[in-house]
Length: 250
Image (cartoon, rainbow, N blue to C red; front, side):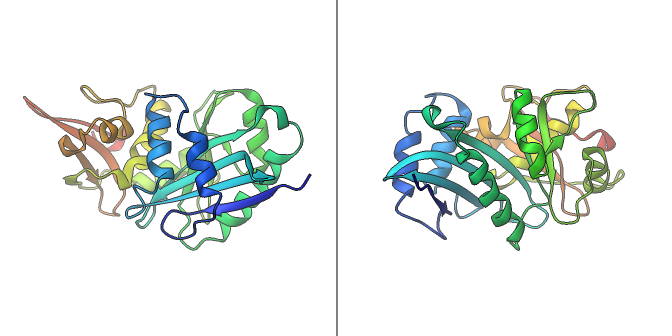
């Protein structure tokens, strides 16, 4: 049976299978932040500030698999990869690997590709599945969990990437937060802090995704270094501003 794979990019490329995707995710894990963000982005609500790319596999008019990656529309963006799922009854038939092949060829050919993609593999078989496509473990001493996939000229290891991205002790500029930079916090900074034995989070909020979905983004701040890279985030509190920065900037 033939499998067709469409590429859906909100505001740029919209196949008819977009409707299958939006219908297919409308009831996924209600109330879970990742699922609410999935629905938001699939509906194109962030298309002005974010590039979201969905790969949709269909058979006879039915969605059988989906995959996503996304990043902010700015220089040196950080990307997120995930929401990968194949219909349970059809797993083991090569659909997922076909999807990954299409994704890899497409993302590496894009001129606006991010510096790297990040995801979280919660099981060994996922680490093994993603390895041939460039993903490797990001956090020292782990066998599952955060994965790093360098793109373009980015270095092979996550620690090398952090050294280049964050630099060394440069002055920072504080600006109001925008969801465009969510992956710089929720993926890159989260994984970088994990490598130092720390957890991402500020008073009352555990991620930029949570802040956006709770309507708290107006209280959030971002900190940029001289290279224009996000090195930390903050939240306005009754006592001032609580900040969390990459270790070099403490």
